[in-house]
Length: 139
Image 1 (cartoon, rainbow, N blue to C red):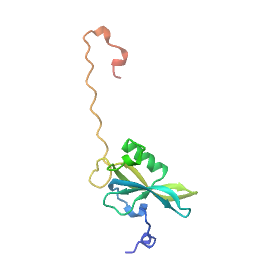
Image 2: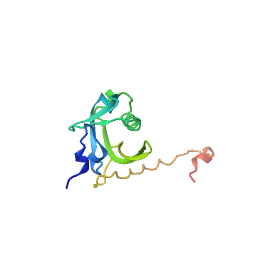
Image 3: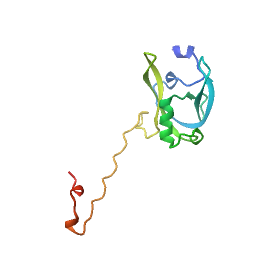
């Protein structure tokens, strides 16, 4: 069945390209390219084994900075991220967009599985009962 999005190809990854999946991709490089009608220079993230990259916006750049631990794009190579499609407000309209989150673990259907809760801390041992403070009593 024809897809209308195929009628309007793009040099860059669009939300419709990931077709409801949440692929994990590995960052290959970041290039600065002229984008859009104004030919404004923007950062484009490319992924290993993929032709198209995504044009970074502030939200996605901030997320990759958080996940990579560095604002320097040269340190992003090899970082694994998960892409997902959602919607956002732009120019007074709701539009599809791609967002980024930690690669994480999946539960088999492409969705992120909840992270297991960390084990409780070991009990505090006190040699002298007179040194037990209210802060040491969990309630």
